[in-house]
Length: 182
Image (tube, rainbow, N blue to C red):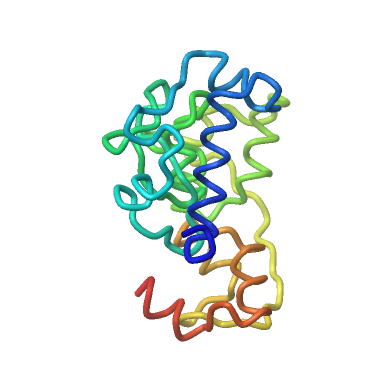
């Protein structure tokens, strides 16, 4: 079963370890604060796969309620962008997570986040549209649906590095990405 579902197995084992093993580096953020794995999934990988289904490309296991348990009702496969919305420390601007706001307005997340951290930018500046960074231009080897690969990944909440690695290795093609996300 693990050879037919390697990504799912890695997510399953990571979930169990974070919640049950005090020696795990992330235990204090999960098991240490009361996050548990439901009885249905406790060391039952086949049941986990039956409930969750296959992991879509570019997604990882995410809890809908960040304070709730790992259970079929509270888990889904999500892109990093979707996961950013349910983080306990998410920053919101005009009702959107900071990542979503940056995507919507064509801003670079890292630049905006750093500006907020060091006080050069405020949430009210962003809401009023008073911050306009210089646009960056890069050439991309891969064009997907008329977009450069980085722009396509940002638009669909995919990890650029994972997607590029999958394209280079042949695990996925440009045509498959276009079919899956258009």
